[in-house]
Image 1: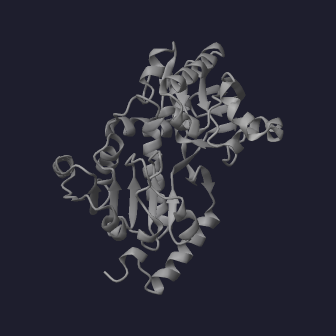
Image 2: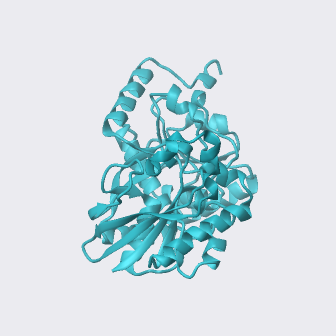
Length: 367
């Protein structure tokens, strides 16, 4: 049976305790020092069974928090991730996926792949595919018609943003592209018009564009949050694929009438058991994990998603392979946790109430 591995790491200190409960008793400085621990096998993954193939795998832990990955020297972090990849090799994996921040360090997996004897994927292609699928589903649940909604792509000229814009242009009528470079925006808009017939608007003004948008896909990669709570329309759907996040965390607290998602939760076929709690409902996973499984089931032991470039055809291909092997959208996630149907319904009702009262984005009041 084909075997895969997936590298995970604690996003914050609390995540250490999920696997290493004894660390709760440690002083905080000792927990910070956990970065000196070597990567280790976390658990076996069993029961992944599609209509045509099966696979098995393992989680490999890389003991660095998200903050440490961003702040420690790049060379140190890359060496730690490569060591985690070696653990995957020793355990018989033929392909390893890079989870969370391990996929964005340095050259987005290229250096890691060069230092391993197995295939490496970031999972970004299926992540984008499910993020857009989740955006469409979120828009439907919030009552938006894609033919009438104002759709905004923040960071549209980047590698991921341009692909998102081109895919969305197949489905929508009112599309705005936002980025800093006017020439690149004009070129992307012209390309979309040539391919689809849609003529997108272009802008560099974040606040004004966000105030008008019903649906936002945010992929800018800016160092600071671009989308603030006071700028969003009631009922807006925001899919934030960027790392660091484009959406301020204040939105989750201050705007109960706005649906913020970070992508899709993937339903994994078979009686899958991850033997580790990463905060999702049973038998579901992140899309990047799922891409690694899909490639293993297909026997595609290659670096499918690597580096920062991707194409529409690449995303179409991995989505088709996902369907072939029984993977599909199993829900949505927000701030690294699955979003319940009850939460979405509460957001929809809050948005309806705000709209009935004529509430506008706070930053637009008086303009």
